Amino acid sequence: MNTEQVAQRLVELCRKGEFDQAQNELYADDAASIEPKGAAEGMGDAYGMDAIREKGRKFAESIEAYHGFSVSEPLIAENWFSVTMGMDVTMKGMGRIDMNEICVYRVKDGKIVHEQFFYDAG
Image: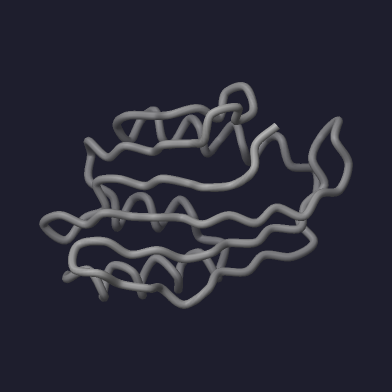
């Protein structure tokens, strides 16, 4: 798949809430996942799919309820693409919050090799 195809497939799967499927299908085994400084404990940078899956598991466990989720259409530049994601959730011990972030991805050989998230942490 080229970058646009990977981007469209990621958006499609995320809109359905199929995050595990997106990782299994679209990510390289040695992918990197980068969070902003000050991210919640256990939500820091992760390298390799085992670590990325574990980070995702911890995040999912921290959510009591989903109230809404959105993903924009991708913006593509050669081997890179970005989307905005919004999530209205109730977090354990934190109450209901509305999270919005910019997500940037790098594609190499038809797989996501790098993802980086930009949001106000803390």
